[in-house]
Image (cartoon, rainbow, N blue to C red; front, side):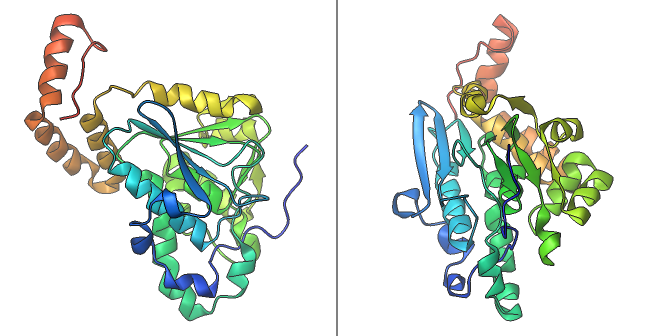
Length: 285
């Protein structure tokens, strides 16, 4: 049985972390990161993995390392899909409250935008993304996962945004949560800071698939495989439309027209007319 972790909801980073911004981290590869690594288990699939034992609390350094690694993956045309994964025991038990306790209001104001942007790094990836979630997914961990296109959880998972209990709020989570599950349900979770289990999370639409804990990673890989060799440019365009929010209709018109300049549109259309859907050999151009 999972028990509630202690002191893991504070969101903001330590004072000495203010020297690194999300913009600077965008140029940092996973190769020189302390907590983040990129693995390539199969052709076309990248696993963005983070490990900050014992419970993967997300501090400024980890958030910025994730953003930097995500930016590098977004520029890699050989990657068709991205899996983000903590470990078998816990995705993330939340925010590093000890760092938040050391911040002044001036420091918090100066870095709030960078932290918010870093936690939204998955949404900016052009590739389809899936969060493979085990154990706890709380606070900043859930904010990170909300930026993924799909969330697969184990049937032992607890999810929540408990920052309100520490006198804070989830800066990267409120808008995305509201769009995902609706304002009323989002307000309930944010205002109370309560945890939800897998059944309620699935009913709310907070997660997309519930599997046995040992199957979380493999289920994420299965989902990612469907995009290998797929229409990379059209998928990236569709993601940009989703991210455009209230301007999505206008953005969709622009993206649709621009796809007519791609080789993939010609390849896909010809293949669809000749052999039906799913038979095109896309070039990524």
